[in-house]
Length: 483
Image 1 (spheres, rainbow, N blue to C red):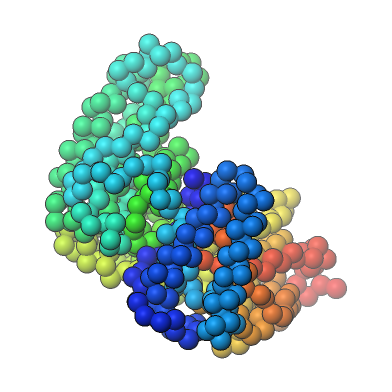
Image 2: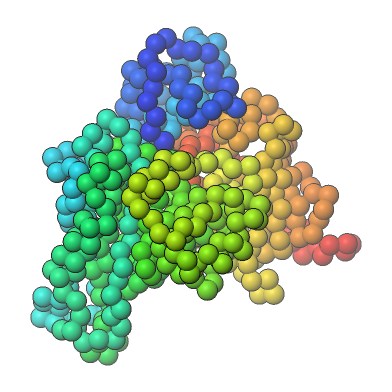
């Protein structure tokens, strides 16, 4: 399926009659739809997504119309404006609908409670090398080692994406590099020693194997990419999507990256580049020299090792970084408890985005959509968005590099039964300008479209509408205090 970005929280549903509308300020554990109703809606979601996968758009539109009528009928019988205000329920519904009944990756008969290797298809060799040169060195297969708890289909467990230590292999002859078979055996043995049976019984553990080589332009030497490389981060996301997000029941409010050695750099980079992709990270190595760590505000990050204490101390007292923790060492009991204690805040009141690339311009419910690339005097586009539910207002502060942004909404962020206001303070403007004021209708079509395309990158969340703002060119070119 193409629904690789439909990520929503797994929570058990209470049985019983349909209840009154959910209070938007209620705890995330509030569940009001009976399981039978939720399953029926999940089936409708799956039908719609599968029509899109097959590019049967007429059938997709028909299924969407029927789905909309069902929801309108249910809302009328319950005497509520819309069922789409039930964010917690729809997270579960879209998760069940986004994972097909027969996923491409068959995990049903998978041995559980211990590690097994999964072949995820062919991995590209980036620069040409002959099959003879590659033979015995690199088998051109994406591989991952994964362990699933015995009852993962019935209970939603945390996910640990583990980045193993990579041997330093740079500009070496192919025949001298670590062989695919040897690497797999080494990583498998290491993972079994690192994560014991008791821990594997209570957590989904996924270990992508970095068995990839890049042959140099001369064709005489090759190098092993590191996790923080483009190839490394791409493989992390591919493995997470293929093995867990579109194939296995899991708890999307607890998806953590566990970076060992130099893998710690990639763990921190993924948090900084995609703040709402994962819940947080375990960092077992040095902090990178250059990282936009301000983007990690609100994320629970556990730093392991005395060498990183100064970095943590410099940040943990800043606003939004109260979830940082540092330990000299870490045992599995402490790790499991930390995973339990730290769940995702899907809708933080404040978001910061600092980037020079639109690919990394989204976090939680805000997204930078246009950057002034010609303005080379300002290196980064900066956006700070703050939601005030009392006034039902979102204030977005942007610098001169930002030319447009989108705010995604649901009833956890603002009350969509009331008028919504979005204020933009741009490039030093302290007063701010109202860019939008009015009602925003909750839309089933928008919610499904956002989930199918993954436009917001907020793993586990659903949105039912959005507001896109283009900052007028006259405002962009106007200096503070100018005419």
